[in-house]
Image 1 (cartoon, rainbow, N blue to C red):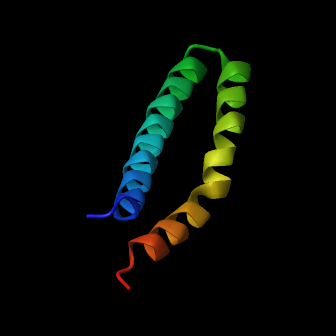
Image 2 (image 1 turned 90 degrees about the vertical axis):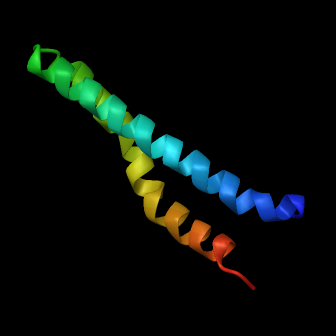
Length: 69
């Protein structure tokens, strides 16, 4: 396998990790909000908005990279 063949798989795994971390951070922000730290929870969710904005592009790009020629 060429090194370039590994790149799509690597990016896919990195994206999976990013989504898992996003879910964990969102859970923490919910926990904070339940304890009255609404402003902090809102700030966390606002920071996570970048992951939502980029998610579709990442999915589409990974699909193209992983499509056999």
